[in-house]
Image (cartoon, rainbow, N blue to C red; front, top):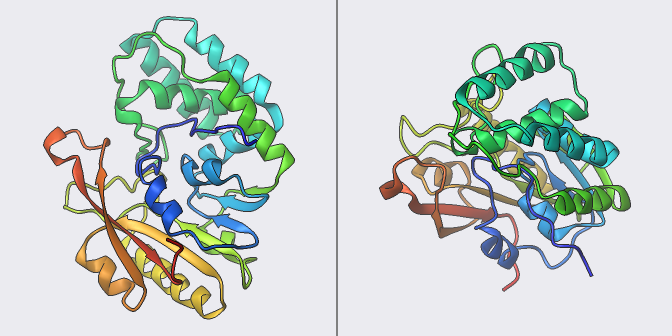
Length: 281
């Protein structure tokens, strides 16, 4: 029996609620699982493939996966130490400053860095990971004063999975992450979404953002790997540009509830799931 695993961070565009739709459209079988925009890893943790390659350009996020794999007890200890003290605006800003100036600025990737990012994720507005032009985390406090930032058993179970399965974890651009994919492998693309309005972009989770050129580059990669017999699935907003970029592929629109929107009246919408194969039903 697999342990039930859930994401350890809240991530813009997280796929927990979309899992039933994604599962319906999965290929019947595949070899290595790839996810080059891993985020919170909801699909990976739900499927728990025996062999996987996961990546993201956000080195802070990738560091959490690596630290959970290598030093889960240290991560748990550091997060629990942070949780011991009641949070306030002053404490939140102090920890955020330490994380930016001591960790991000110096590219320090250790268990404490992972714990700080997890803690900040649970204490920042809407669990949003956003950085400024310098690459510094700049999301304000969510006014959460007390509470556990982790479920210890979940982190230990994730560590067990990452250590018993054949998992490659890398901080790379999506094209680099997919370079080793071959016919019969399966790639799930969950890139930063194309904004549904001019003010709805949450793509700046790295200092370079994810641009229109990146979306075009991703669409070209999707086409190229399809010719090689690599099974691929991609999710995004239900906007006209997506239909243009992925014309000729199977596109299915599904209803979703967008928790990341600060306006509750705009939290219901549609997303699309695109595949280069006929999914199972």
